[in-house]
Length: 345
Image 1 (cartoon, rainbow, N blue to C red):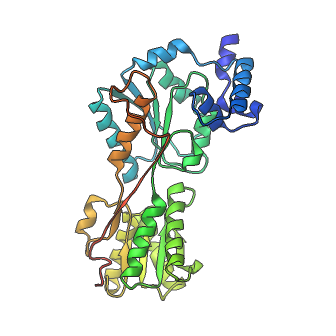
Image 2: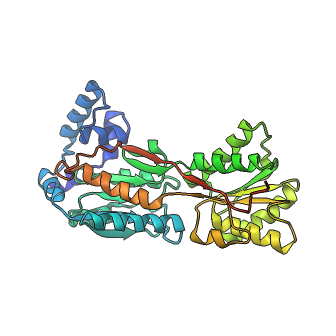
Image 3: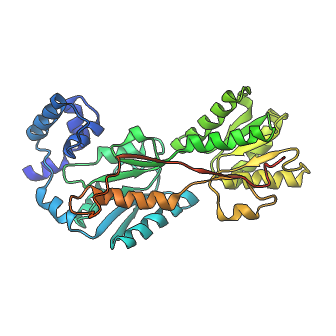
């Protein structure tokens, strides 16, 4: 019973006892150098006192394991499913197999059974491939204990977890909004994604800053929240036409929303791109065949998955003969794809 009690001690318990963040505890456990000597000594003392000791035998078994754990939710979204595909392909190239655990919702809080299941398979590491939505990344870290293998978090705020790989959503939104300005649009509306998603908030922030840097006003009536769906995009565009009738362009936070804008514009006789510029985000394979073809932002989801697998392997001392050293925070740059839906000139 005493050993079981030890295993139930979480990284949150240790962090609370030390008066530091969970990220700091993780850095000490992983022997990171970016922790002061005094903090390291304090954390190590508390870890010993509380019995929060990583299982060295289990860690050794994991290093020889050919299995990675992947936790995911939201597979109906193209970006998430494409990221999973990138993880699977990268794992196959490294001779690794995947154990996939799908959460029912983004806000699932009790992660103990799921993590315990992955531990029972001695996975070499865990990729948390669900983007940061609300406090979901916090829930995962609260359920970590001394036996939890390295975890890489994908598509969220770099300060929210010790090891993260994300795409620069702010920069992508900034690029597409500046492109619209360069094409002569001056009243640029934005349909966001659901704003409990970090990615959606970053895209909104990029849109806003591009307007400010271009000397254009930011009208609160020009921004309305969507939910990534075409249906909500349609309602949002109709609402924008009432609230912000002077708009001459729409930056939609994803391509499915942009598709609804294009369809509605066509159905009511608004000329795209002459009277209305329309841009999306994600570069779905179908966007080149929209009418007109859609300007959008390409994200390297396969590269994201590849980096996640390489980062997990790098945490094992015997993993890479190339001695690759990836940083704990990686942010990939997106790419602007310009097409006829915004090209006035």
